[in-house]
Length: 400
Ligand SMILES: C[S@@+](CC[C@H](N)C(=O)[O-])C[C@H]1O[C@@H](n2cnc3c(N)ncnc32)[C@H](O)[C@@H]1O
Image (tube, rainbow, N blue to C red; front, side, top):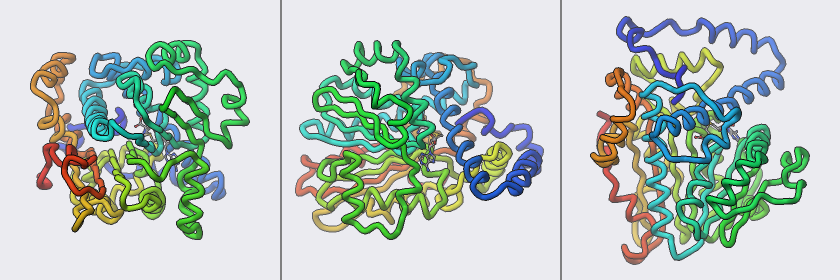
């Protein structure tokens, strides 16, 4: 959720604004360029969405919604103008919802090693927050993003205040060797941090390059092992507003690439956060506002509802299963999550942070973003289940 994405409610009441406008101008200009320049330009726009995400996070932190000392350190410039209250609340709910799923995953795998793979992680600070919250955690955390974005993140990390916080809060040191921080090195190699059994890997990689249909399962397993990804530990794959920017077939291939590499006996889960419901007035205006900025939510129409998101997860082998294999696929919108996942006292705290005039807009906006989560595992008994707590979360039954 970022400010220019919010449709103006007055416009909605009068009817949806005309499509085109600035978007058509941008589109025709781009069409005149050759394909490569065209793609580079489109990619640059997608890469820049990380600035929206990072500045929204920082705004929510500075307004008191979230406690995240790393948000400022990982945001270029370290300062943002305050977002609207409904934006701050949206960022808050999105973050705590994903944190809750991640926390349950970590809690139920506490006795063993586990792994999180974050697609299009951008400037996300989740790994550092987790390491601060669980100092002795045994976790491999892999982040993927375009080289431009991983380079920018490493640049932010080179700031002495980041190194200081990393040491103080996470008991981790930045590598002293300049090789892993050099501009040359980061284009090809992943950047790594390590403290005891906790590993952080930052991979500069365009995810679309993983979608080569000619690579067979053995080659994929070799690729993953070269990246340091283990195929024998419980793994959570996270796409927080990333796969939506890929062509639908590429987004599907990326999900298959990761989920199919694991043996069925290894617990595997996917968490996705992205917009939904593009067909109503608010959704159409949201899409058209983004199109005007050159941003195309490429998978939005393919996975446009809670049901479609669950079906998508089911197609990747995450969902209800027979016999020893168990699983599930669920989805809930941000409005539902705000109402049912957040405890009353915490809701009161959040509501007390800022006066929100735009309650109607908030609900509309919140109904157009969802979290979807799917899992599979093999367990004889509920006590061994990694994902049993996920099945206990309040579920949204219907498209309301
Ligand atoms: C809206 S930002 C979200 C960043 C982060 N997940 C968060 O929620 O704060 C989307 C991110 O996905 C990344 N992304 C989109 N397409 C990608 C691709 N093909 N390969 C790697 N990263 C990609 C972008 O570069 C950007 O950093």
